[in-house]
Length: 367
Image (cartoon, rainbow, N blue to C red; front, side, top):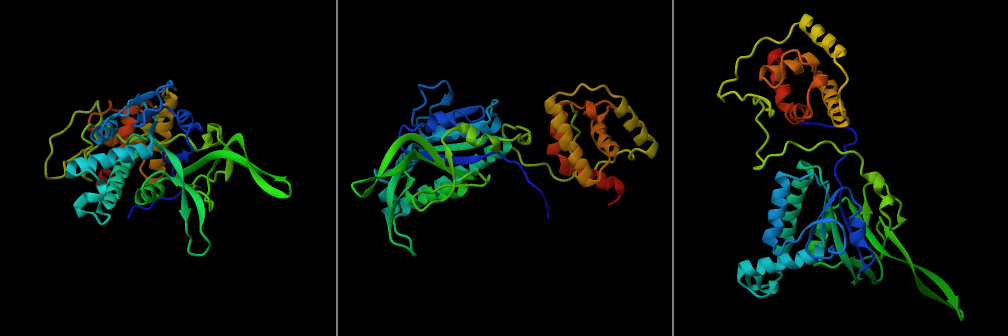
């Protein structure tokens, strides 16, 4: 078992929904460095980066390409979820050669079950994109009013997503942040009767209410003005993504050695390759002295990567000298290069291949 402790900062996966024209797309455009998959084609009046897929196959191809290369974007905005669902339904019907999802496999609700399964598959792909490329994922959606009949109370109307019930349940369970947006209302008394009046103030809700779905895992206030700055604090600096690979190959086996762009790969063999003996205490001291003499030329990204490497060293009990020995033996850096002088690419590869490094160090120790 790999047990981890403490808070882990991950990219946000969320939903923002509400009535038409309230500013959901404008709100989404304020998220960090967004790219819109504009299924609804509602962002044309805004200065944003967008792709407009015409079919569900094109939509999935966009996700595949982003998994290989996020091109510097930090947020993927899907606008909107209900229009995407319509595209998915059309895709199912075309593949099954039917003109209605109700006719899928002779009906009995099987088409809606298929749609919910396709949503689950899509969300799995978006999770892969989110973790590999360190991207926030945001769905924009419309709201509708639906009758709700709870088991322990009388029925009432409530706002929900404009989607099929099963698909909406899958999407809401997936999200960490579901925001419901509406115009604020107030009550006045006229002629002895209390009447509800609407205003032009836009508000968003982040917690469940009998009249709408909402939730958050960031300890946000229940009710806030509909402004991006109200949630800006949840976008803390996220860890760097895993190395980008076009084919998204699986992680290396424990006996593999992490590769870097500068490294010379060694031929693979079934046996564990023989390596020189680990550095002696004297060599460790020499290397540590060299690090203390190294000039300070780090940039902010390099500082952050070094901090992450230091945390890995501290938690695993591996010394700097042992780490340097593993990196130098594959030719990734010149001998006696201080770790503080490793470039960002090498540091990212160290973080991604930490399991293999730990395995090799333990082999040298005889564990």
